[in-house]
Amino acid sequence: MAHWLVKSEPSVWSWQQQVDAGAKGTFWNGVRNHVAKQHLMAMKKGEQAFFYHSNEGKEIVGIVEVIKTFYPDHTDESGKFGMVDFKAVKALKHPVSLDTIKGETKLKDMVLVNNSRLSVQPVTEAEWKLICKMGGI
DNA sequence: GCCAACGTTGGC
DNA sequence: GCCAACGTTGGC
Image (tube, rainbow, N blue to C red; front, side, top):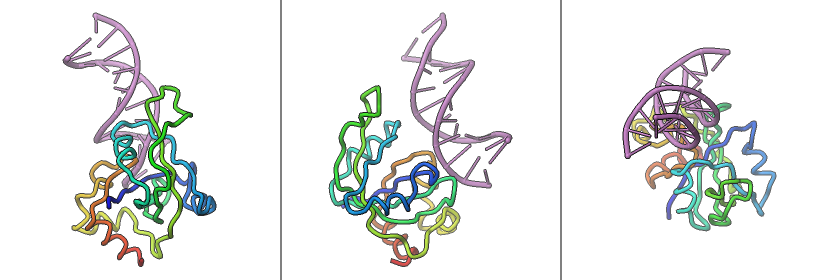
């Protein structure tokens, strides 16, 4: 089972809003990058992703789960991009900040560190487990 | 098909 | 608020 990391600016869509959306979840639109799109398309129902706050906070705050796989984003006029649906699973007891990740040598190869602009990223099994542990889950 | 110009993202 | 990195656009 693959794991992922998705980013959002809290001023646009925050973890709290994701939690408030409840079990039925919400769509994750706005991806306008082909690499990110590839990752979205690779997601399967039931797979989990870290929810990262960019700009404000710069930390992983929670875990979301894919409840609907890739489908066209009707807000995209070009028709090239799409989205998936996520629901909030649980919050990290201790958010894991970018600084913390950068300070952990085992996480130095994370896409988050090396290609910070990519909004949807794969996370390896080892990275997933370690961050869960660091987050107090 | 190349590449300069421009726009956007996101860490600082 | 700045700017580096990256993606996209458009003229040639």
